[in-house]
Length: 117
Image (cartoon, rainbow, N blue to C red):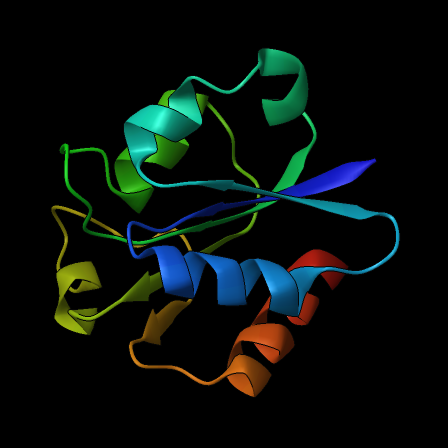
């Protein structure tokens, strides 16, 4: 079964995102920070087809760093309250940036497109 990994330090937002993404044939796995996500079993991480990770999280492992440490090149969405973090050559963004606050329709639409293609 394919999996989506949602890494968000805000618990209520993490629950909402997971609920929005739930659909048949897709497991939604959540973590509160990048370090917690890296502790998930490799068998689970190998099934991740979409990473939705906050660009800036406590503990120093944000979305970009998490993707690099996982060694994945799966589609990635980058929710952030600071959309300008993805601008510049030193820290290129690996996927679309969703500026917080975003609505569930926008999240669902961007996720659907990333999973399709």
